[in-house]
Image 1 (cartoon, rainbow, N blue to C red):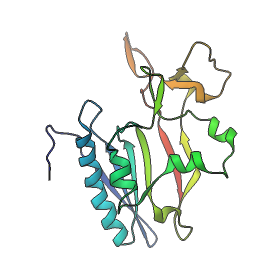
Image 2 (image 1 turned 180 degrees about the vertical axis):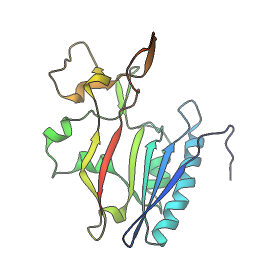
Image 3 (image 1 turned 120 degrees about the horizontal axis):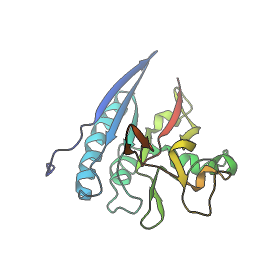
Image 4 (image 1 turned 90 degrees about the horizontal axis):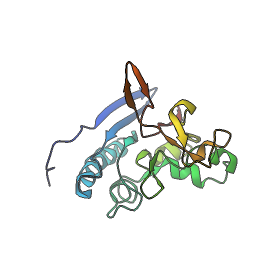
Length: 201
């Protein structure tokens, strides 16, 4: 199998055992967009092998982190290796956005996604929560789709444009990246908004 041209961040596997159930959590920061798509595909296929093995053992899987895959990336590592594959994972944000049981107001109360590209004025789903189908089958432990959240704290967010203000929904705000100003002063936290969700065991 192809090796990466340069070293990249490891994938952290965390095993949670709750009662008689096992959940494997994979925490990621895949190669950036300055790397070829093949590097992100390598990461996706690496995780897919673990997810497929987990499913055969009756384990749940969650893949979370900055996967650095742009919406229009082709081939798309997430779609091809983890969603439309033997791994059969589901994108929790997509489930949230497409659910008819979640109000438009709730969907609009969070930003359009976790990362904003100033060049091109577009939002991108670089940060993902992917879950195994077993976490949405209504049988045992369940991911709570309506709990999906993109956290835009007022102190670490700024309007996308001058026309937006703090009186409007956070869907018009973008993250403020960390910047050290000197003399012990700083602003911002990250150029990505954090994402979260809940699992009911």
